[in-house]
Image 1: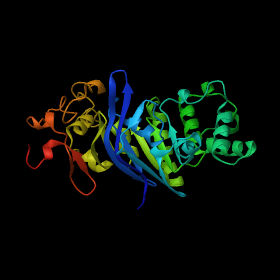
Image 2: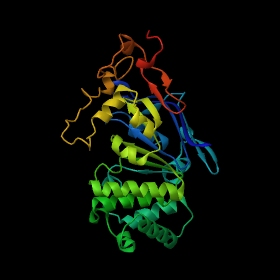
Image 3: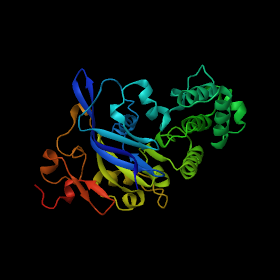
Image 4: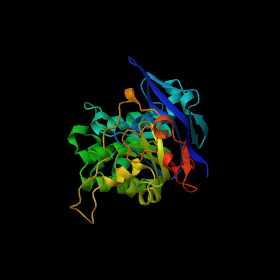
Length: 331
């Protein structure tokens, strides 16, 4: 099966007053059409920066290394994302073939412009539509994501809608251009559990209907278990474990993945104390040498974890982990 998007050796640094700060370090993965990939990790792991790179959307002080490559395979051909420069060229990954649902809808909708006007504007930007055609498509999409009285909501402002409805409106806007790849950056974090479940069900339905690929960014492995086909676990800019979601959750191999799962509440033992991952994620300004997780790891292997970056070990054909525990002969 041809991949929808391929990320190879992605290393991204930010130019700051303190020098070059590494945010993403040698990340590679691929995603097929109709597939949902969970990108999991704590705040500061590099999830959103990686996702924004897929749309070439990071700030101007971002520096990509020469080895970094992102290839989007569209119905009309392959696109080298990092080579796109002009706003016209970038349209294909910014609302065209790729759309993004941001974590906070109020930061995405202009407060002084109606939701409908913003939806019409983006449709006309990415397609050859009249205002009436764009309005019809927008109202239809608002209705399809479960917003009642869609024609009325079309003329309302974002602040007039509840949190759940705003999130649905943002999903409708992202989907109205019929993207092949949807990036969802923690779309359920600010919602209560009932609305969260509805949004998760909605995204599953959309994958079935539109056969798009989804990158689902979250810090919650519980949400990933309900949503994704496969999961990539990130820590301080590096991918440390990846595989089918059921396999990774049932048989986690990296100590960090094990720690994230141990921190989840257990429905069969609600009185059991939660076990957080010890310590805090280091600042990118103080990036540890060797394995970036060794400062918080309870399974350190001698000095090798402090001095050598772990390589990927294949657990099976689809499950891999970057950890010195699985080195055949520790250095």
